[in-house]
Length: 456
Image (tube, rainbow, N blue to C red):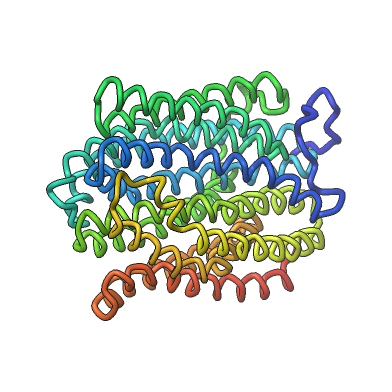
């Protein structure tokens, strides 16, 4: 039986944040701000590659990087879900004031994430050519796309290292520290992008190496900081004793969250295959629009991660009423932000798309604008998915979020191969929003039912 006691100051850095007391709205809002900035900065990794590649190397190079976007999302999404899910257990033990449980959870994080790094790197590299062929990648961009994504996959251990350490810090309520390392790393990525592409002329491969090196720096820096600043996260030899039950506690939250992202990514890969038949210009336009959307809608994922850690801590402290109140307040906040994101996307679509394309390409700008104007209307549905999904998963109710992902995959696949027949490229644009609505409805219903009957 775990030993529970109050964590003394020497065990917990002042950067940690107990989210089990105080105003839920204030806690969620203040916790989200550095996390939001961090997520925006993280978008700069792929955005820097896209902007610099698009403007220095042209439309075909931009399309080459863009067509690998869903494949990149498949891996990064899986890593994000897995590491965030594992850290939920850490947050629960921290909320329960169980120091030994926190240390054992950190050790289990290290073992499970290390194993996943080996498996995912090997499997991902072997999948590159088959997936690119399966999604109808044009021959004119195939070589560049394969080179780019293979290098990104070589860097999977670096992606896991940063995300795992960042999630552990956030589990203790520290959403600021990961941001600092990420800002420095993003700036390094931009410098390396320009150096490798403009000076060394390494093409799209140079952009990939710049990303991998930058992510590795962020991971190592956050790991060192975590060890030095947070004694409670320092593990001992005894913490690595393998326990099947404890491993399953991590996996039953981490795997559904990871598969949720992967299912969504598979749907995006299917959609990419339907898009690729429209040619390099439409691929480039879609790529630019997706990058704009990811930046504008980054708050959706931010509030999701916030609610995962908030729910985890309060579940550990057995405070169900705070989970209910925090979820309601977070929904109101995220809907307000989604409306703001909608307005930005509608008003500044051309200017934002112009960051990614080289020269006078009105066809690319117009196709990108069309995508952004269609999808922006449905941002509230997209944003609300992240709230209910993360709350349910942090409560240990991962089945419905996983099934909502399956519904989303089916809806996106059906839409990708039916709507373009009627509406052409516009059908591609509507496929995502259709999938969001199909996923949001069952999540809302599941949360409404579970929160009334849940026992802590």
